[in-house]
Length: 195
View 1: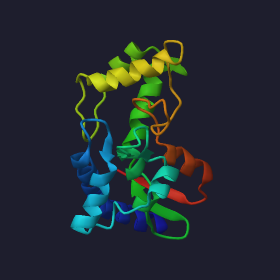
View 2: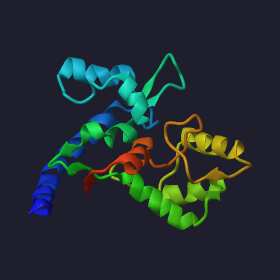
View 3: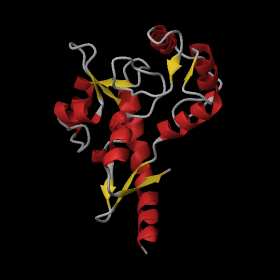
């Protein structure tokens, strides 16, 4: 019975997940996967949405606050989107959350690379072929993304480690969100991912 309830809840929740993602992508700062913190809070202040009101401290703990430029803090979209504040607890042991597309993409990337590190050219070639709900496959990576990828490789003997997080100083191109790793390690609740 619990599975039937959560399956139906997941079906009901999916449009909300898509709407949240669409709103965040519209706030995105020049293809960075991040939204300016001022824009993020402005959505809550000016449009009265319940999302986008989490404290900076919570966003930092979640791994969703990029403070690499102190004069322009930004919210890391995937880390925020898959945060616990966007899940709906349905029972004491089950929460319904948005499906984490980053996990699927990371799994494809890891399977294609098949080792713990790879040259940036290899990763770039694989990533350009992958698609998501917001990005088509068979595309060209932006100069910013290629720069980030090459910067990571430069600080790791010419290769990109396949383990990391979007919130660290060495921001990676595609990695599992800090929240996902933290939640996976600490949770005692069964989380239903919907998609």
